[in-house]
Amino acid sequence: MSLREKRLRGQAYSIDFAAAVLVFVLAFAFFLSFWQNSILSANAAIGRNRLGQAALAASDALVLTSGYPENWEANASAAQSIGLAYPGLPHSLSAAKLSNFTGIDYEKNRALLGLEGGFYFYVESADGGRIYEAGNSTVSGGRAVSIARIAVLDGKKVRLRLVAHG
Amino acid sequence: MAERGAKGIVFAADSLAAVAMLAFFITGLAFLSAKTHEDSGAQLLLKKQADDMLAALERTGELPSMNLTALNLSIAATLPDEDSYEIALDYYNYSSGGFAFSHAASAARGNANRSKSVAASQREFVVMANGTVMHYGIATLRVWVG
Image (cartoon, rainbow over all chains, first blue to last red):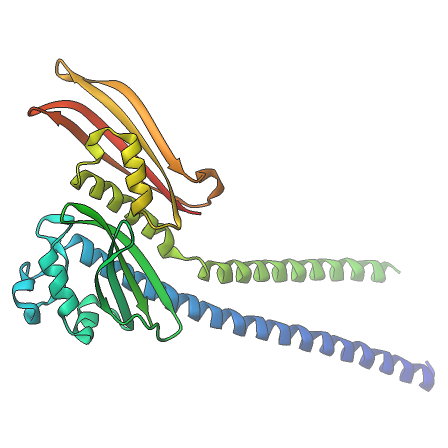
């Protein structure tokens, strides 16, 4: 084997090696970027799902329970959990509870509903007229989840909308 | 030459195994990535809305009214605009201590076949007149977005 042949062989190997490294680096960079995007997007989805679950649980408490104590509307400052239904009558909302709920301090309401971010709540009749509202309608934090529930108020069907944001 | 042939087989098996592993890895990654984007709460919310609607219709006395046209209008006005639905009612007549199927009725807004996820709720009710059970009914409400 001549010296020239040996050199040529060595060069061919290094070109192969360089090409392989280039391909590997490109593939690795692509994978890294894909991985980074996946993590960011998964984090966003987790945050959105958490917000949705918290809003759904809060809407359940409002529509299906009467809160604790059951007559918390008599002394709203002593309320430990908020519910708008008559005791033992899920879906039947009490006007007294509703008007007291909308009168409670925003921060306290937020804590009672178990929401980390902000919230906006309203009750509207079937024709879209708003009967009660509470909270902050300005969405903060870039994420918002809107939950619509149906209940009965004074013998008529109403829609409750809870928008959780943050 | 025999050495070359053997080498070729080894390389082909290696590369096949490597490509298969890479394909499995990428498929798994894409699957997990897609899973994180699924909105797990959407289906649950539809189910809750269907439950709410039937409970509210029973509380207002509309469900036992046996008036499908009024029921349909009421549901259309109350469910959020983004929801489509199908209400199906089965009525049974009460006579001599038993129930016999009387008739079925249904109404809808939208086409459930076009939606991937449909939530359903069912409620049983009785129709009474002068303190006597006249009919027994089963209401099924299917709700979907679209």
